[in-house]
Length: 359
Image 1 (tube, rainbow, N blue to C red):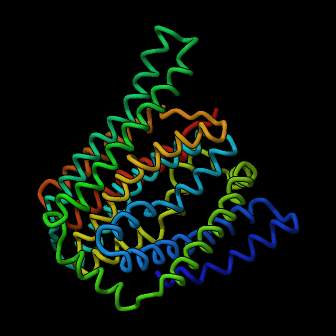
Image 2: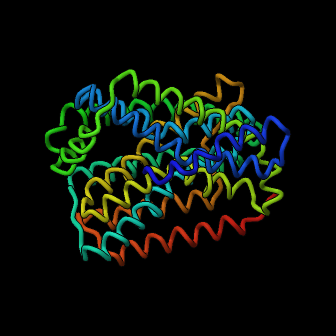
Image 3: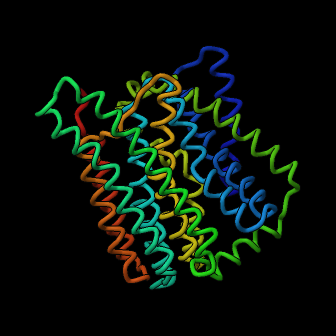
């Protein structure tokens, strides 16, 4: 999304404010705005490398780096010990993809094209993975709630142990998902829309050194902005009247995935709903099966053991989002009313998080 590049002006602004000891709230806002275009640049560079690498390796690159920006932000939050923010960002990314992105794409695409169809096999496969993913994220929370009555003194350590084991299983499932979609069943799941999108990317092909250089520079810039964002989070949320829970669940997922979200909506407006659904559902699977377990394992490395136990509100929200999104996917078509319903659910959840009491 080239129009987002205007926000790159906030990159030097954030650096200057940080060096001069500027207002933490201004640093937070500047860093957040700078990340928006940087995420898009990372995605574009990854796609350029993917086209050069061929279909299988290219698909692996896109799958691996699809949520890199959000992973970087969450890693710095993890390193700073803000575990609740990290877990909220995981849940928020799932909700954002299933409700906000899919809803906006269905609403705007439906208003222009009445009804839009997509590949049911591809979407159905991902929907099945979503159910498994959500169960894997729900079980640690249910385990925590029930284990407290049996072994209250041991439950914290048990939560971490269960989450680490669950993370290992989820990564294995993700590897199986990659093999299924990129190798064994690629011919069944691919569509003409996918080929056309790749053709559009080839029209402005970069050299490998340029793509690698841009990807490296954008990654470093995102890392620096993420550090600024996390270091000023506490002061900024207090000044803005927001809770860290709201920032983690709503703002960070939007900041990290804005470019990808905008692309999904643009594809829907161009009546390429299959690509739009692939972005929203595929990104959700990446978060649940790759980003979440990687952060759990990263917690061991940085000395911040993290479990996958979430609040009851987050638990209900994830379960509801998967049920609603599956009901939309099952008939392989969308319309503007379904989009409106998805956005309405997201708005209600955002309001609930905004008014959620802070302990």
